[in-house]
Image (cartoon, rainbow, N blue to C red; front, side):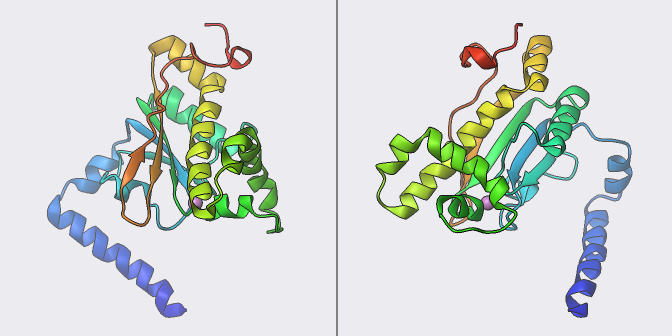
Length: 211
Ligand code: CO
């Protein structure tokens, strides 16, 4: 166990040396500040590292991750990250990225208890209920879970659009654009769900703030 812990710090020293050999000004430049054009909302799953799968360098992506890439309207952590990224960093794009084989989605589809996390997974069960007609028709469990992964991303994109943070930014500067993606851990490829939103005109009226 101690060996694993040491390996992390050794890994850091190796990484620093590699970065400096490629670009001696790398850390000096990053220390000056950040202006990433992108906010990433993804799953905490260790197999979906935000920067790495889109080949982005440090400084290019502002990241928020939680179990099953949720946008829960009472989550102060997510709201703070969103507000900072949109109002201060003025990101151009917000991407919600789910992934096939998501443990959170699979757990939410079962009727077993998983402990405290069931309160978080409840939000995914709500997504299931919203799309129950479509999902109940899919008999193959794997196909059903893959579709729920996609529908969950779509609902989280909509949840972002419902926030005053996003709607105020649209009013002020017509961005950020909100996108929904799904990453396939089996082949590394990202699927664009093509549900991008850049204004509130098509939103259900009850969620629309006057702009
Ligand atoms: Co996941």
